[in-house]
Image (cartoon, rainbow, N blue to C red):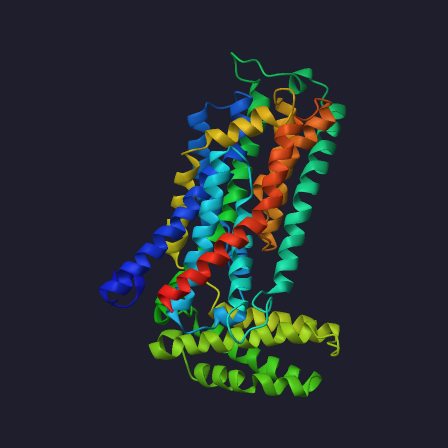
Length: 466
């Protein structure tokens, strides 16, 4: 265990850490059979693959997506949380935060899965994070609402709001184009229940299923990585607060970046520079002369992380300040320099990626049927056709892949199920309003329900851990 966590731990701390990690992996496991069912619904209902081949292959693609998808979305999820919690040195407060948002998200996901409703794990997790932030702002000495990074929430909310609209519209348009360009009627009629589709159609559907599964892993899997990193940083900061694997060149570049940030802020906003003078000085002192972050005393690593996050937060506040004009070139340089500085803090160990990938991939293979039945049979009035499945999945694969590239957490569930609905309208099949109403209700209720669950749990768990 020491080699895994980088330091010997007391028995109580180790057990608490293992329990927290088990819950985080449990969330990703539930995410696998809750969300990834969307990806396999089309290949199963068009007879392109048998159910077990489909879910095993999708599980492998999810695993690959997590492993090769980077950590942009993971860090985006982390920075939804209030800066005060991110820089807190209280392990108890950190554990209360992570456990409450995880348990709240799992409870809602399991409830909607049991009812066969393709609700969004992304919405659930983000709602849980907002709930924790709001609950934290209810504590003495805080202003209600101050505990939420509203700028990041708006960015994320816009992506989540637009993704189903784009999925619906783009899938409908793509099906219409397909009908014009590829007149083969086998694409647009009910699949033969006894035989698989023609080989070329089958190949397209398997390809799109693979793409959606990979994109889901690269987006949703990163959310799990972010949660695990929050746990590790909170409990074992000496080992995970900083990326001790960065090179000397990266350390030197970060030192140059913090120096430029300080000079830029002093020039354009002298009053603001006073607020970060101490953190900047601390970063410079900690990095000067270092060839490796492993050379930094273990007890100082959390302090350096706190200073870097404080500088990052100050730069963001400066750029949002309507009373201060930040020239375009300065804004671009600040963004680039902050990104270089955060290379020291924004990372995920190899074993975390593998563990999350495994949990998501395994979850894909279990419990998938409830959501698949809803997607395949209950959204439209007619059976899903080859053309509809391929159109919806092509849009989902492309949209989620782009979102992962730009570090935006979007909902696989929303994009794909909206895409299926769009193709049903374009096909003239019509929608089953009762199912659509239930799905829409789950979508609308997900954010407030997750906020309420996680916020309540956070206040209760603080009594235990803080």
